[in-house]
Structure formats: structure tokens, C-alpha cells
Length: 213
Image 1 (spheres, helix red, strand yellow):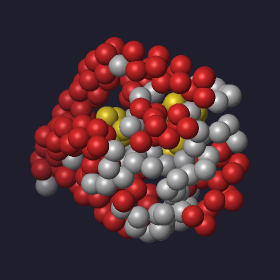
Image 2 (cartoon, one colour; image 1 turned 135 degrees about the vertical axis):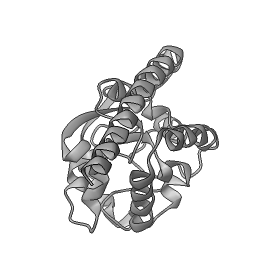
Image 3 (cartoon, helix red, strand yellow; image 1 turned 180 degrees about the horizontal axis):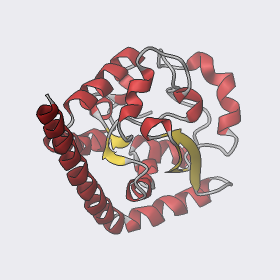
């Protein structure tokens, strides 16, 4: 038994090391070649609404450790304060918030949200080792602290830019239990080959905007 445990531990370390190398190399590559998109999105935000270009929010990372996640701002500046008024329109039956035709979105924000361009700054989170390219989506601290069965299991791995939920419909999956099932499936089966498969399937999911609100 000690031998088997040691072997499993070594395999896990090898996977995490390889995953980190891929995260760094791919995020550097994507940051370099998406620089024109960064400038275009930032320009659109400044022209379409008042406020900062970036949206910063505390999210729950590995084992619940807090970190600041970056996104291009797609909503009005007081969007967080308005959320309580819109909770009744929540499409997700669980500890998070997703709404179709969210009135807090700016005109430019609707476009960058639909095309997932708002997520580009999270490549910096990947470089900082707060996130990975593949892993369960990080919840805001408020949502992560809610008491749901097996909710904390999502925090056993580093959060990611893409995941099984992302490539299987995103907001079209309106039952949190199904979202959680997909996250736990990834956690239990995670490997470099699965990560690469998810990354490849993320491309058409983003291009066609399936489930993006």
C-alpha cells in the first residue's frame, strides 16, 4: 500500500508539473497574438460606456484561497449592487447567477460577452498561477461560500478558463447539480489528454457562442 500511494502521488505531481508548463506556454502564446484584440476591446469599452476597462472581482481559487480575477468590463459600473434586484431572474438553480438579456450589460458588453472576449484578461491570472487554462470556473466569494452539497469539492483543483461545463452548453445547463456533476467528472478524470481535448472543444464553443449570455 505505501508503494501504491507513492506511485499515485508521483503521477499526480507529474501531471500538475506538465499542466503548469502548458498553462504558461499557451497563455504566453495567446497573450502575444491576441494583443490587437486587447486593444480593440479596450477601445470599444471606453467608447461605449464610462468606467474602468477591467472588471476585478474576488474569486475562490484552489482550496478556497481568494484571488483577484480580471475580465474586460461588460456591464455598468454598479452591476454588483444591482444583482440583488435581479435574483428572481436567475436561470441557474444553485449557488451562482446567470441571466439571459441581463439589463446590466452595455451594448459593447453584450458583444464581448457573447464572443467570450471579456475573458481574455484571465490569461494573466493563468500566468500568475491563480488559475489554469482548464478547470472548474471560479465562483465569486459570495457564491463559493454558500452551503450546497459537494460544493466545496470544486475547490480541490485550481479553477480554469474552460471546463466541461463550458464546452457542453454553459448557461444552457440551468441546473447546478448537472454543472457540479461535470466539474466532479473532470476532477476525478483529469489528465493532460483530457485538458487538451477540452481546450480543442473550447474553440468551436467560443466561435459559435453556445450558451453564452
